[in-house]
Length: 311
Ligand code: GUN
Image (cartoon, rainbow, N blue to C red):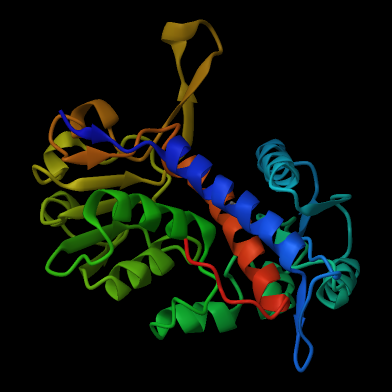
């Protein structure tokens, strides 16, 4: 049987570190050019989360983000806008948040309603407040191997921390296969693995003989959104399996109309073969919010002229 990678535990450790850094920031205060550190000027990390419309899943995610931000001691602001909010109004709000010195991180929850151009809204976020890592400046930095100065998207950043816990920071000589090529997970994940010296293959819906390819992976990351697609015989014995999927499926065994959460990996099968594996729930999921907090405290430290903390 494989080691179960406990995302809740690692996420809690990240959140503890964020809390400690937040207290430090309050104690250290603002570091101004020429003035040095000004202790009286306490800095409180500020996170603004923007949600448009009433998608129930998005509302749960956003409520969790705001709650964790408060737990960390952040200045936490949530903007809940009506589903028919116009693009111009949303862009105006982003402009205000960009200019607000109390805000260090801005997150616009996706998906946005169809009448709004998501790309335009995301790219309007100031790169230094883009704690989601979706602006072209941050995407470009990560793609260019500048991952230590970029904001990295939270789900791949969290997945990478879990991989490090099992395999260490230098992944030289290991083959990684990432299934899924999304901008939010697959592509940044591939860049992070490459930066850690893996040999990386990105697979997707047009890939031939996915099972055989997956079996070459020492590190297998599944981020496709298809319940239990990755079977036990797709997994190389001893591999590290990171399941990014969160899929709700019917669970008639629990009663009529009941559902349960599963990943993109058939956990029972894969756990028989893998060296280490993330469960769903309790694997990558909790890491996403923890890394959002980490990115926000990093942004606040940088805005205060302090060194960038490492996670
Ligand atoms: N919707 C689903 N995942 C994410 C995410 O990581 N960031 C944002 N902004 N929206 C999302």
